Image (cartoon, rainbow, N blue to C red):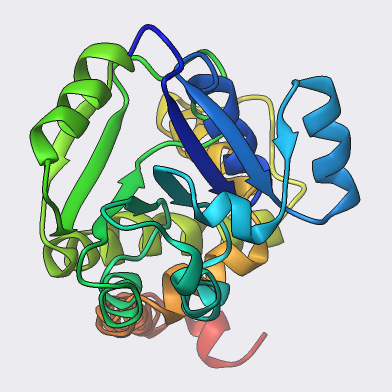
Amino acid sequence: MSKKVYTLGLFGLGAFGQLIVRHLAPYFDIYVYDPSPKARAFAKRHNVTLTTLEVAAACRFVVLATPIRSLKELAKTIAPHVRKYALVIDVGSVKVKPAQWLKDTLAPTTSILCTHPLFGPQSASKGINDMEIVVCPVRMRHLKPVIAFLKNTLGLKVSLATPEEHDRALAAVQGLTHMIAKVLSGLEPLPQEHTTRSYDLLMQGVRLVQGDSDELFLSIERDNPYASEVRRRFFSEIDSLRARLEAHDPDASNGS
């Protein structure tokens, strides 16, 4: 893909949409649909073509980089305009629901690839080489060239999974990380001196997800079908630990 012979329709020019533009612009003619003023400003600075929903949906490749909760309605809206044999890709943090929505909505001739780049604007600030992307083929005609592009051109590590396998793993990997980060952020200000290595590593992890939107956090927790069980076990462990500590702390049992 040394020449821009393919068109890519991008829906959503938020933080991750902007990251997509930076890394895919050398290989695709990108047409963006995002009516927000911020999108217009970014498009002007980066020579990106803002266009209509119909034009973006009719590209050879279509990438949906919108919030998960808007994806179902977006799929219904673009379905009449998606060209035959196009490839539609989503990049969200949850896979089971989006995979089903796209499969139910888009024409049988449309290829569907659900992906989850395991990085974001903050963790990829110095580049995406050797970063991991999870690929969930839902309905694919030509998977090998896509994987080759991700590996050989973008330098990504590619992991194949079903949507169920992905969500089951990420319910803990992302669900717990974001939940702990939310709790620690609520305890600010936290010490920045006289710290240990383990504390520094923990706070480094918190900073990597601290800038993520509350909408993303809620989607990770509410739209992943396996997240509620992970939360139940997590809070159960906390309650058990608190009971153990308070059993040996007379001040805690007295409420002082």
